[in-house]
Amino acid sequence: MARKLPAKDVVIIGLGWTGAILGYELAKAGLDVVAIERGPWRDTATDFPPAYAQDELRYGIRLDLFLRPEQETLTFRNKANETALPIRNFVSFLPGNGVGGAGIHWNGQTWRFLPTDFRLRSHLEERYGKSMLPADMTIQDWPVSYDEIEPYYDRFEKLCGISGKAGNLRGKIIEGGNVFEGPRQNEYPNRPLVQTMAGSLMEQAAKESPTDTLVNAVWIPITRASSQMRANQAAQAVATLEVSTPYELGSPPKGADYWPSYIRGDAYLHLGDGAKAAVEYQKILDHHGINPTSQLYYLARLGSGRAYALQGDKAKAKAAYQDFFAAWKDADPDVPVLKEAKTEYAKLQ
Image 1 (cartoon, rainbow, N blue to C red):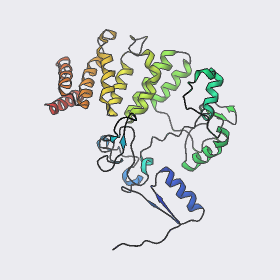
Image 2: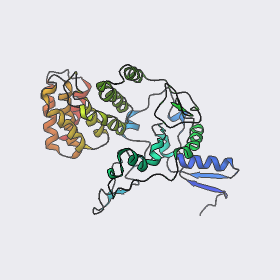
Image 3: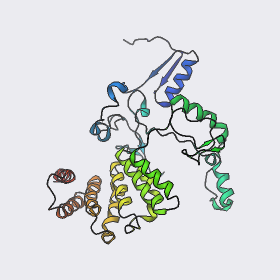
Image 4: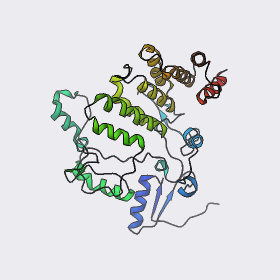
């Protein structure tokens, strides 16, 4: 028999960031609010204690926080003339499953749009001329300006306790913050987080060598992308490495060596895109002469095997794994990456 629950003023379906903020504002106005959410309840003390290293297998590989595509999914097509098919791997689009929705696993980055983003068409036409934009390009200015929306940015940052350092406070440029941001009326509500050692070294290098192309377009992005990969932020790592593209496959010490291609290939593997990963590793394999002694060259063979396996091409995957084993035949048998490779190869048999 159906059970009738007490009447409420407002029912919110989905208590992610949007639903939670709406619920907060409505409750503050005196309304009786209830939220309906799918998935389990989680809290910091029991599920995410700060002193506990999170289970990488559970959260990073098995994606415990996310909606399972076999339970509920969406359909997708690349072109209008294709048949839309169910998504079986959400890749970088990861709908949350549980109270808090996708807000439970967000990256914690809340960059404001730049003032020019709100008037992008006008900005581009002023800078490059009206003939630069194709006639059929639909890009338009926003109906609101940065100045109009700035108070709401400020309100959101205070509500959520965002941390950082202002670089443009009421038009005054402040060292230590993002000097390219739009003007803020108020400082961040919380102090910026303490930099990691890698971040501190990158900041120091950028300050000491502001016009050094290799530092700013190669080594700093490579270091940042490596940190993002360790934080399971593969999509961000790919974006970070875009600036390094013109310098990849350059011979060291004047070039980027194999690093951008290798990290990008690793990122595509994490994103489940075997085809793009294979392209990156093949760049390395096609240019052995750049750095003949680099271990990245031989690790690219292993990456190729993983990329082909991800695509379901067992023949090419086996060949790539065998090339890697031949190159590492004298390696210590308990080296973790070698043990992982042997386990993966056995599954291809």
